[in-house]
Image (cartoon, rainbow, N blue to C red; front, side, top):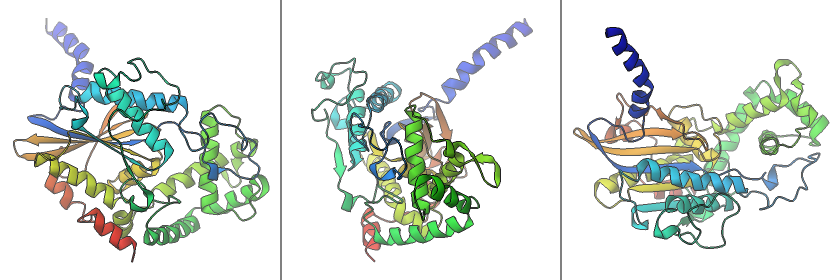
Amino acid sequence: MAGLGVQVVLMLLPLLLQLLSTPTSAAGSRLLQVQALCRHGLRTPFSRATFPTDQFDSIPWENGRNNLVPVGVRDQYQLGRFLRRVYGSHLPFSTCKGVYSISSNTSRTVESGVAVLLGLFAHTQYGNSIGVDYDGGLLPSTNPICPLDIIDVPDDHILNVILHEEDACPKLDRLVKAEVERVADLTPTFPALQQVFKANAGIENPTYRDMYLSWDSLRVQRIFGFQVPAWALQPLTGFKHLTVFDALADIFNTRNALAASPELRRLSVGGLMRTLLDNMYNMLDNNGRPLVVLNAHSTTLSGMEVVLGFSGKILPTSTCMLFELHQSQGGPVVRLLRRHGETTDIEELPLPCRRQPCPLQELERNLPWVPRSVQDVKSECKE
């Protein structure tokens, strides 16, 4: 009988582990709020990311460059349904009054925000405009069923972070450019990649920026099944086990990990972290929304992950960082989870605290670079 009991436990163990790892499982606590910081859906290549010898530069994309493709819209729609399925029975967001959705002012993030809202309310009266079985294609030419707050570029110190060409923070631009030059000098593959670009990409004096933008174009083309040029798949001279494509990926990921100093952290991700914390405190004061969806970019999530102690590598489209606020017996605590890409795989990420879930006030104390307000970031950017 004892052996049978062990077998039963082993059979049930995977189910028990799954239950223990669900987003709302914080022992002895009550879930108050979820803030979903999400990368946009799958998009076409950037118009600025091409290089002179790019054979696919003139491809007429269905929704234009920089924008979502149908599968990207579908993934964001499914993300909305995922949020409702996981959190709908725990949080009161059955109407728009329970949701706050915010987006940076780019077409791909706005389209993503609309698609998430459509999925979030697909099975309610709010979703009747498109029906409950929406499964891809480009977005309907209608307004979102709930308000979507779009931040204008000059005021966006929350969702548009490191190295965006429209960055509204000149001081951050100067600091990042100096850091890029320093990192480029320390990157062993950089001189070899310069030679490759001169010979094959048609760029006479390739910069660090040329390289990571070109890799982004090659990466997106590869996702859509286009043939990557042969030179990009060759071993990099002097680096036996590293192809040109992989070396460019390292350049891109290094760029994402630039928020090292407290000053860079404050100016790049500080406004976003301040906003997340303020939303939590507002919720505790009964002035917040139980569900907040922040529609952002790969650099936004990578920057946030870097400052919290993670790798900062580029994350798949439709990835979400889920900041859960719980009320426990000892006070408010925070859990951080990550939904990886368009899958339902969720993992818990440790916050910089002595114990998990992390007490809210301890979390703020352990992030000394976080400004007192977003306005402080705006003021410092103008100095």
